[in-house]
Image (cartoon, rainbow, N blue to C red; front, top):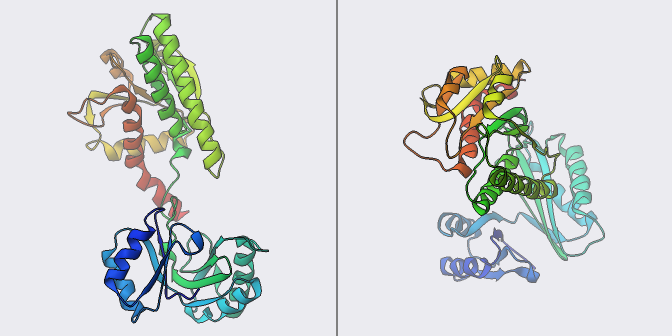
Length: 359
């Protein structure tokens, strides 16, 4: 199927996109979901494809990406390689490149086969460096059954969750110890809050979680809170294992009286998160330096979060910092820890990222 423009959109939005493109150019032949493949729209027979592309990007908000098709061929490995070489001059001297293939339909080769074959041919032809992480140019090869569509785009279009200039914060959170007061209300409420806190702590892959009741407490609500905590953490952990392309840390859980937790860590870094503290924005730089210095020296940094009663004010004198992450806002128990961790990530990320770029 010939095409001037190759367009992607969210599943189910194909006909909406096609309708709007027809309004922009009545001469265009627009095919939503070509070959039954959702999330795609092909445009052919446009009187001015480049002008239409500009209008689509400016006016059709449902479009995820849109590109001029620079070359097309039958979907055979040899033809794709020879066609890709016709675009070799799009990679300038000194530029790096990558090849990205998306294959839809049944073929005798894989997307990886195409990437390797085309990448090797382009490298030999141009002498350019292959950079899979941060390329200057990307050759996209879109295969739909018997047809292949090729176009070159800026490397900036490779939107990555962990692109250049980002530091993986889970590496920091794995080295934190969190002390969290349990929610000890009615059994069902305690269980529900436990599942939320469990998911919350596992989302960030916190190294260790200490459930820290204050003095003697009733066993039944604590039991239900812990039951929910383990279920919430485990359910999130299973999702992470299936969906992350890396190893996942399962947060270790302990129980210790809050006073004894502080006593056992005298002299070790401690940050308490309570509304009585300094606004985090006011101490951001010194807090960031303190945290990074402590972590680099191999010390465990503890973060304390309260619940219904909050952290006893008498413990504040043992903390290196008492900080308020949202002045004037009463943060509910299930959001307290995530608010604190996100604030810490915000405070220290730029320093970590700059160190990473200099390494």
